[in-house]
Length: 164
Ligand code: SF4
Image (cartoon, rainbow, N blue to C red; front, side):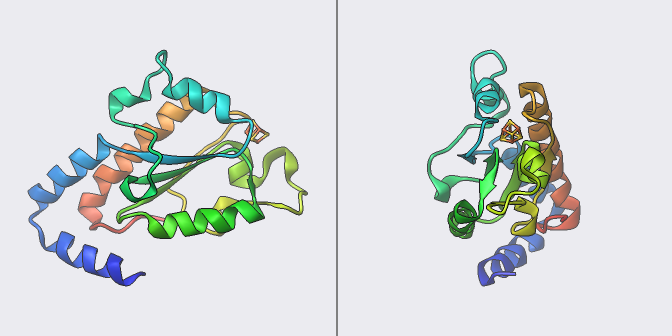
């Protein structure tokens, strides 16, 4: 656990529960993910963000700035070299931060299960939500973001820590 995390949890956990609920409620409606679009799942993610499915109506707004982001969305296969960069990005994100896998490649390398260069995200980072599929439909991506919202709201009862 990082020093900043300990400090954040120390302050956050001292707040009364109703106040923490308000914080979490607000956070659950403003998930700003950085999306690492590294594979062919990307058109489905674009659909989910586009006008038809419009994930922004739940406050999910793809964000280009890592320091203002709440979640790291891995969209598609992740190479070992890319994971090094992703870890650096993750370290720069403010607490609390969440990780979402989109596509079977991020979960288990999918059709490239025997690849020497691809990696599973969960081997490097604590993944909060895994959205399976090759590629997952926009509906599945939206459902995954709903699960993430539920998890953020659930953090109130467990403190600021994440379930892993
Ligand atoms: S899960 Fe399927 S669609 Fe997504 S990156 Fe892997 S091979 Fe491509």
